[in-house]
Image (cartoon, rainbow, N blue to C red):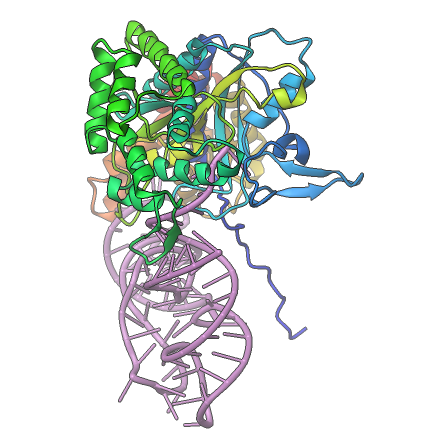
Amino acid sequence: MTEKKKLIAPRLPRGFEDRLPADIGAINAMTAKIRKVYERYGFDPVETPLLEYTDTLGKFLPDTDRPNAGVFSLMDDDEQWMSLRYDLTAPLARHFAEHFNDLPKPYRSYRAGYVFRNEKPGPGRFRQFMQFDADTVGAAGPEADAEMCMMMADTMDALGLAGKYVVKVNNRKVLDGVLDAIGLGGEQMAAKRLAVLRAMDKADKFPIEEVKKLLEGGRRDESGDFTQGAGLTPAQSGAVAQFLTPFATVDRLIRFFGRVWTKPFTVRRYEELLMKAWGVSSVPAVLTEGLRELEQMRKLFRVAGYAPDRIRIDPSVVRGLEYYTGPVFEIELTFKVQNEKGQDVVFGSVGGGGRYDGLVSRFRSEPVPATGFSIGVSRLANALKLTGNLGAVEPTGPVVVLVMDKAETARYQAITSGLRQAGIRAEMFMGNTKNFGKQVAYADKRNAPAVIIEGSQEREQGIVQIKDMIVGKETAAAISDNAEYKAARPGQFECKGDIASIVAAISELPAVAQYLKDNQ
RNA sequence: GCCGCCUUAGCUCAGUUGGUUAGAGCGCUAGAUUGUGGAUCUAGAGGUCUCUGGUUCGAUCCCAGAAGGCGGUACCA
């Protein structure tokens, strides 16, 4: 046996992450807050499995050039393909269609859970992450869409992000109308439309000149990578740019929309503006319809008191490419995000959604309108972690009952049980008990609020020593001499040795009292 | 997917113009201190210098490729 045992390197698959107690606590707190908002809006929970048959998830997907890419799939023993869900919307559509007859319509539901994407991880992007969705199925009007936007805004407020986000709203019908107007309607132009929409989506990321490059020949970024353009003529790209920037820059456009948001605004006026910019005498009907829906939503927001600093129209919002059929929306953080190295990081949206009237219809012969949105819980938590806004706190540890005398473990166990019955986290030390200091160090590492010490001296007197670890740490910091440090026994006090007295004394420690209050 | 940068101890990083035993700080383990977390001091453990191939008498270092990480870009249901 001279050969060394071959060890397996412990390593995490790329794009995945372990979650530690502080993260778990923070995520739980976040999801609890989100849940409260959704329930207040009348939504009920539903849970679907992580795996679905691939065709129920995928057939409808826009990923025509790379079918099945990006999805983790496996074959069942009956040779049917199953996939890990990549969002929570497709499974909801399946659930609704499957239980169509029993569910109330409109059907309002929410659900949280992990979703999986088999693609390259990026800043704040993992291959397993949590989403928290809400959807209304069976409500066709823009008031359902408006409600989604307001709920998104309320959720962000509930998470303590008031003033640090904006919900951007657009309408796919408007975008379709613009594409129509520049002669990109019809089947044979589908690929071009896709490229144009992708380019338009970049308007909040790049200056308009760069977007124009994407609309025409293509663009080379600073790393030297070349992106193929949509191949529009200068006249066409100019018209798109005019839509994106009636007054030459996106910033000014946003101000323009901001103004119409709060002041009287008519669809007619915007149409006139576009006709003038494009030099045409009419706009496509679908564009007008989209504008009307936006106008209705705007009214609802205004009456409900959602100012444009919280919800605003932004013509560059595109979202999923063939999935959405009407209003689309997106939450963006308005503060800068930096990574651990202090570099500014391009952080995309932390949530979004829209109307997807086709998604349920593929399971049924009649049309089923639906609208919903999704918050990227992991992504949002990641952003907040980087900015120090995530309340990630180490959980309060257990009270540790020290083992001073191996022969007395039954007694120590009895104290531990007494604490547990009173609802207090407690454990008897179970490691190497030879060294007292190690036991205290263990309690420190576990973030224990207190340790209980009962050695032979205490036992003779019928008492125990309780050491308040938090007070102890504070008072110890002022002591520099080691002998003095030990003699001081910081944070320590005596208590009668019966279990009721111990429980009473421990319960009074602030950290324990807080724990009891939080866990009633 | 494409482009750029990076990879040396558990962590953060030095270093070797290519040469015998590869370093620091922090952390970890043990002791000083027979029953007290921190501080101090002492000692110790811990490395296939990411991997594979090439050049070379000799590679952690030079070259090529791969993997992983970071960033950008593309995609994003």
